[in-house]
Length: 162
Image (cartoon, rainbow, N blue to C red; front, side, top):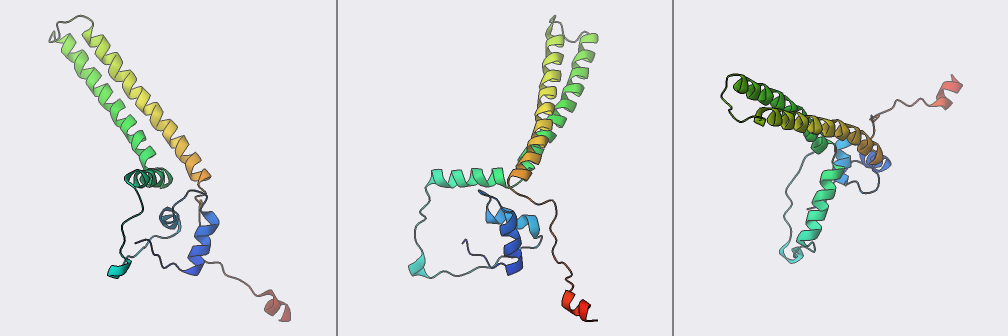
């Protein structure tokens, strides 16, 4: 169900920051840490088939993933770092096996080391680009750097009367 019960101040805060194309659920996670759910029994006469086709649901899912933050981009970064580390370890193993004469084919060692090294380097570079892209995405969708939850207000009229 897509019903929500949101505090008025919270709703105003979210609406001030959420840009076009940002899902409400995503924007709520920017300003709230504790979200609760409750089951609501729907009446049988109100139950209808969904008006969404599979293609529309897939489109919504993809938009939700892209607007939800930078977790997928961060995954690319970790994939790049991990594959670079594996490429270094794999390269050292292949070179050791060549020195120990366990690899009789000439040229195989150098090709394997080069492919492993540059594949890891490319994924690492993609990870760095993904981090920059994440900064741009956060800025474009309007995610705030911080949110002031409450602000002490001074009534100037009372201060002047003193």
